[in-house]
Length: 124
Image (tube, rainbow, N blue to C red):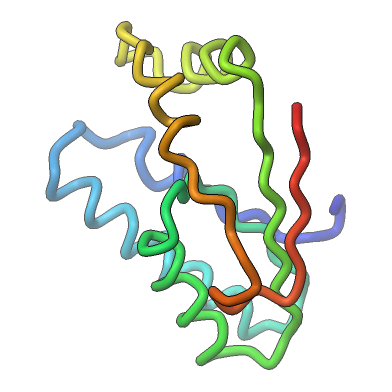
């Protein structure tokens, strides 16, 4: 999706100290940026690790309330090794990455019942 506008949660977190307040603020800021961007009518990619349905719902609702558009979910399911390598690169401040496998174990594969028009699962 080279022409899509990318909204990445990491961009809202990378310069913050890791606190509950900052994490919650980053989620809100990300959702607000998503809303502003979908209103433009352009293609948008939300890069965000939303492992559970309840975490995806606020974003789905925000898009549905602000845009009459097709909502496609692309799930990248990396191997544990690839996930650990990505975590190391992205989260240099978090030396313990043992949680990477746990993340894969709690992943709830999205469904159309959540509000998606299409779901694409890619095993990586």
